[in-house]
Length: 114
Length: 113
Image (cartoon, rainbow over all chains, first blue to last red; front, side):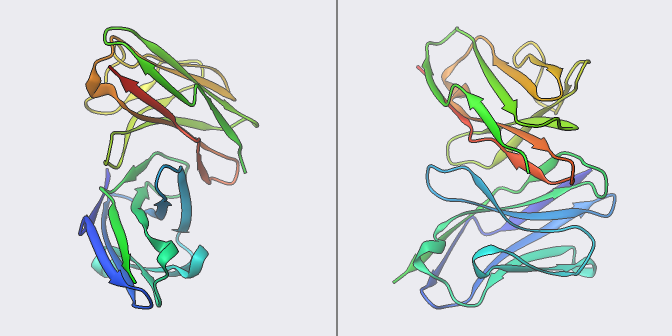
């Protein structure tokens, strides 16, 4: 079985500051890991995904995440926050190589202060 | 990639009625899923829609409340039965395409009065 825990339901940073959104996972098989973003009243958009290749994954809009097996973590970072980054971010996990269902974390709302 | 359409995009329904949501994909896909996103919440998997057999439901979801059909590899329906205000949510169809990438539909926004 798979699960994810997102630490912090709400994160607020200043424009230009580092963004760090935390995600820890649990999986009985080698996982695939994802970060999705949801802007207000819009659908889900895939930011990036880890599928057992490079542990540092680069995504869209300057985001990246690092898979750390020893820490069972997949934290999302961006060096410099932009006002347009304000959204809900979801970490998610699925069960590895074969196509399988994706389980979502509870989400983290990112706010950007001017 | 896979392009997913859902009908209706939104609806307002009366308590006790049922609504069927359709999901159409522009290509044959191996797996289809239905998710629910309650207001201000994350996505919760309802079930895996299996082609030619009964859907596989997650804990807390039952066939009598959320019957699902999947007659072929490009189409599925989810029915929300005997609705109550607690069923007000966004319902999303999701598919896994040939490259094992998962795509989400635009969602159906349901309000139950």
